[in-house]
Length: 541
Image (cartoon, rainbow, N blue to C red; front, side, top):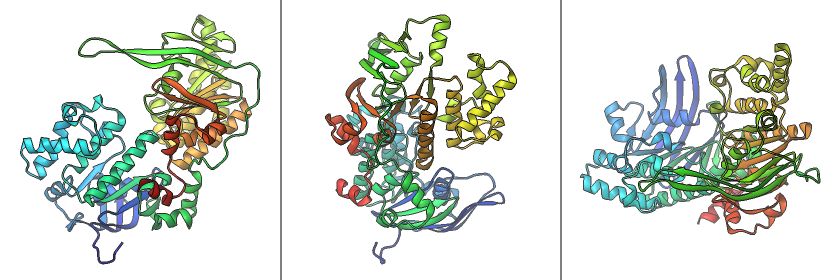
């Protein structure tokens, strides 16, 4: 970056104190026009707190922010609320992780897109509406004029994020703050959002601050990287140097935790003659209301596969491809229109009464979001004990409590966590508790539905290692559902690729990754962030 160029956004010696505790310790970085700074670290490292405090968007009780923060000539730390209202949206735009909570569900896209230009640029309604159409077209939303009358719930996750980007860019800000904007998206949509932001940045010359827990993603988007640990910048370098010559142990751990196609997948699974679980011609449809009457959505169409004892079968595809619907059909949460589901030679769909209950106990599920999967009013002890009580797997309260402690230790959680509530644990600890609860009913098949997608990459690596160990120790069979082919590669012996409710490709994991046959599979592989940031830039340009 030329030394003569002044930063458009400068943060120097930023310190954030809540009460008597300092949680951000002297963070500094500069953002120039056309320049991207990546802020990376695990949950709780202070990424969002630092940037949102610097822009005065975060206002916590007993919060004190010191240092120096300048944005396009405005001193943000001394600015009045009136001055901040003129800066937010006009000089700095924000794109957050979850567009479903960032967009107002009660307002049309037109209302949300025209609000900023009317307020900050003093445009008439007609001019603001025309600008809204141009913005939706710029972010790649099809039929933008018709979409203006839509509400956020009528869009997919990727489309909502595009709208959020359009809202952030509505007043041509000097700086775009992107706070985990792709974490909740599948890999192909993530790649599209990355390319979109970079194209708009090049066209508009704005600076970008991209916050993420994923160094692989930061390698695609950033020019310079600041690595945060416990509110402190432990390493700051150009992105290529971070990847080629990391110095701090924490940076090295973040890099080593990334799932990689270059590492070999698991060794071949034990060979068995008879499948443990058989799915034949499974079809699931849902009836949805439309202005012209009920319509049917075919979520899964004629899907068939076998699973063998002790193996991991990966099921991969984009959001909406039907992966979770298959999991719902297997666990009895979704009723199929047709098909056959057999576990250990017994028909899951035809079973009734005690036979059905015994069969269902052999199938357990771990969900994507461990916080919503656990009852916030139940202690860990009670959450894990629930399936033990339901299936009568302990003869006394003492035996049940002993079993709970055994399960916690099995997933590397100490016994003291038994009396905690979900909010008193980290995301990784909550997911381990969810795994322990799933194991409490002593299943033969464990369905893992995006069970690592919401975790930091280092915690994700720990949970994957745990799952591999449990599979060997307990002889478990996994259906590993994910949208990220790199994660599936590290876990799975065989892989099925799903698109629009159908299995479009399947086979041995190593063969499928080395020589994919379908264009869709190749597009999923191409969307995985490359190992080196230089390769990422070459691919984009």
